[in-house]
Structures are given as C-alpha cells and as structure tokens.
Length: 110
Image 1 (cartoon, one colour):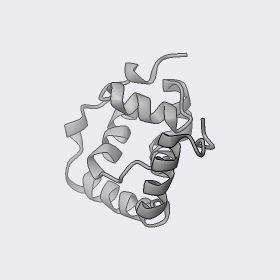
Image 2 (cartoon, one colour):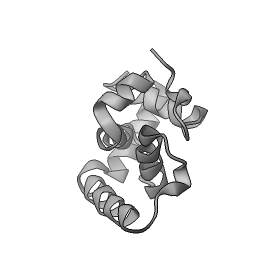
Image 3 (cartoon, one colour):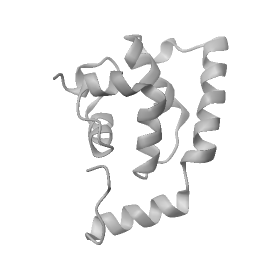
C-alpha cells in the first residue's frame, strides 16, 4: 500500500491528519473519496478550511492544488458548505481534542 503523501499535494501534516482519521494509505483515500475523507477529518476535530477540502479533490485527480477554478470551484464550495453544516461542531471538536491530549478519551477511529 502506498503512503498517502505519494499523492500530489498531500504533505506530511495532511497525511498525519488523515492517518489520525483512520485513513492509512493512498488506496484507502481513493476508495472512500475526498468528501468522506474530509468528513472524517472534521470528526477528528480539524477545523473546516475550504482550501484543504478542494486540495483533497485535486490530489485524487492528480492535479495541482491551484488548478481548481471557476464553476468547478463554485460547485466544490457548495459541497464543502453542505459538508460542514452537518459535520463540524466546534465545541465538541475542541473538547474532544483536549480530552485526547490529556489521555482521557481516545479517538474512535484510531
């Protein structure tokens, strides 16, 4: 299985976040897709960021991160907004991150 960082646009920090979210290989990321992967990142406490979202889409297509433009970018923005409405609770994420740091709870995806 290939490391996630073998995909274009995916560096060590994103790879570590994806591994924390239970996605351990490039093949696993391709299998679940960018939307499901980003939802998992949100579930692990990552703050939503549109660029990170569309970078995942570009990575899975083998395209440069800054290749996303025009109507494609607008469509991805709508999908991102919809994903974030149901997938991110900043209070819950902050609390879970603190509890994970002090060892009180362990992420369910580890």
